[in-house]
Image (cartoon, rainbow, N blue to C red; front, side):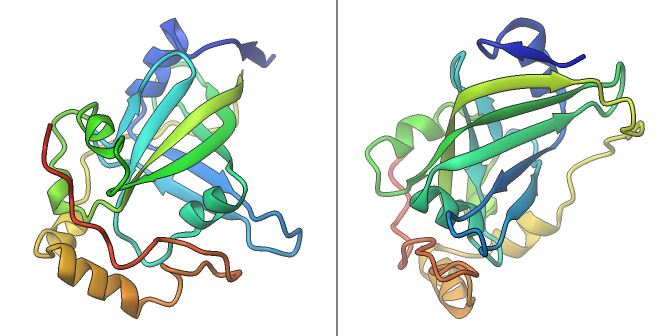
Amino acid sequence: MGKTYERIDGRLRTFIEAQPMFFTATAPLDGEGTVNLSPKGLSGSFVVLDELRVAYLDFAGSTAETVAHLRENGRITLMWCAFQGPPNIVRVHGTGEPVFRDDPRFAGLLGRFGEIDHTRHGLRAIIVVTAELIRDSCGYAVPFMTYDEDRPLHASRFARDDDASLSAYFEKKDHIATSLDGLPGLPLPLPAMPPAQ
């Protein structure tokens, strides 16, 4: 039986932080719009900020659907499923916000992430999610999975980019500044990274 939680702490927080990947789901307000579901998982790119807020690093990619949907309506669901151990699925339904590089909060939030070298992945924004409903469920039908290691391909592709070349890459893509459904996506040109705090 599923259970509802008031906060992200204790066993629930331990479970979330132990999983090597999670999924994000967003959608535009338009019922005909494109629902987006994305896997996330580079080690060190997720953090629990407090009992009701989590954050993850939004890295370079070929679209910016999550950013566009959050800018329009803020609705987001995050989901983790157990790779090993007892079967479990956790969902955090809430409100998300993309915090861009030129936001005064960006540097402080970035300081909350551990050892990950964000400069090698084309960091675009930090997504902050405030939980409104936290639930788990059994996960009996989820198979056992193993995590071997992060793929090196993302870092090897984007490590050679500076802010100017990253912006040029984004500007060539059809669905970075504008979503698949025509919503405003990632603001371009990409602001410079703020100095480390």
